[in-house]
Length: 166
Image 1 (cartoon, helix red, strand yellow):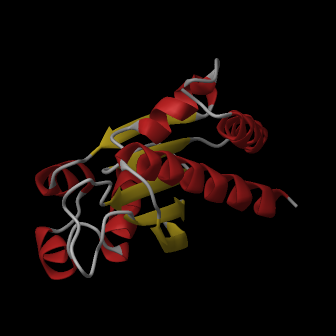
Image 2 (cartoon, helix red, strand yellow):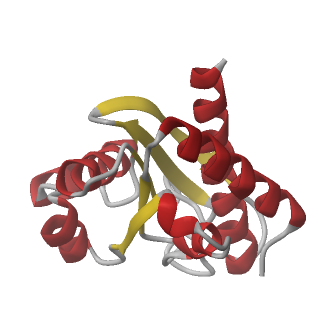
């Protein structure tokens, strides 16, 4: 179920991408495809949404998105380096202009002292250029962390698109 602010964000993203004749895709781990589902909830989204990859396991990140296993071993799956490589990997293998990637600890388990539950890394890539890589610390249960991640990712994409249009 979409919240009203998500629906508005998706409509703004759709308008900007259609006007620019661009397409987007998602590479998702902790959200399990929720960003892609939110995007495709809008009728006509095939004009601007190309694909979503759920790469929940480390193996999927490596096989589907080209994230080097050594990078995951060095920084962990929940890291800015891995989030950026997920986005870059999707952008290099798909006919898209924008890629957003997310990886994090949604909970209730899996957190550590250095990466507690609610730690999420997001990355946004335009073409093959890094636009933004950032870390969030969300609160609440698993559902809340995932919902906040969706909103953060969509918000950042919308801001980037509208900044480039102005």
